[in-house]
Image (cartoon, rainbow, N blue to C red; front, side, top):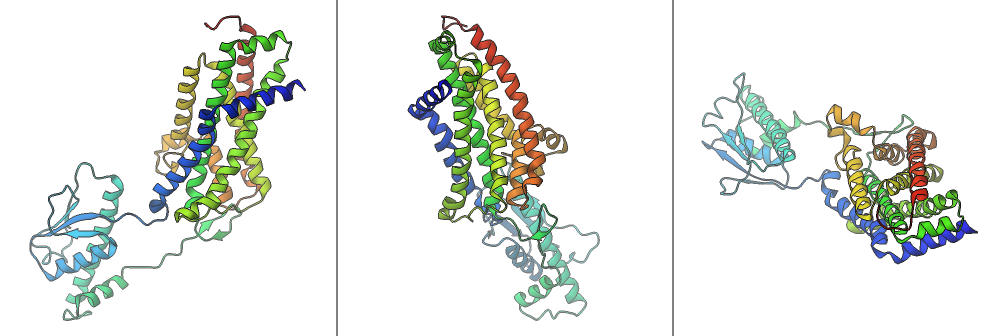
Length: 395
């Protein structure tokens, strides 16, 4: 009965705290939707169009072929003759046409403004390389008499493109070892922001504990003879339920809300038991870390700074903000220390790899071990804080 009363008290306090509710539900939901929408073009491989300058020092048939080939590689992009803006620039030398068949060959000169991002640079390098290869191949075919130079430019370029392009069959390797079609954008982006949002449960847990200690509520609980187990469970169980509710609601957003934004709906392959096991494991990990943070922090301000800082650091090294695939080797090894990385790998095994409960068991075991370690440390420190609580608000 006492435990139920304490849990009702915790739930009522939380329902009255609109800031905590916003942190737990509104902020993760908005963050998930906004980030999924902002990254939709990248995830769906519909990259934004570019604006660049293509300058041919001397106009020739070869330079026009190169321009057409480059435009085909950069669909919807603008190729300008000149511009006063700080745009990427491709410059063809005056002897471009006469040196196409030289070996070794010196291609166009690329120049970028300092603020040009690495993705744009990489895209332009790849597009220029392919366009140059097609232009050189066409020059060779014309020189060999295979292609008539009198044909329209579009036909000649199409003949060169046919000899340089291949249809690639891309499939997804599932956890079972079978192959399937490619994963959609939502399956790759939603899990990361869902995990990031669930870890924010640390903030209201720590803040509530600090308010109870500073107001003398904990001391009154001690005077009533409440056991430490009841106090700890009254903190963990409500937030564990909230985490599970977060898990379900954020998945529902991926399934039902993302299509309203024009994004592919989140598909949930696999058994419900696997998702429930992952949800419980992840919730225990976040709540145990929250208990430790509540016991370590000495004020609400410290709890806010520590909770926010820990959450961001775990996300930064765990592949949430930056995919692990683009990290250097040292960072990828460091990422394996983050519980967010384990949860994300388990999620992707289910959503993308169509895995089973057995496939995610190793990742969930890590989360449960993390929960046990953080919970044991938090319980020890929580016990000391409760026993040292006195009639004062100064510590």
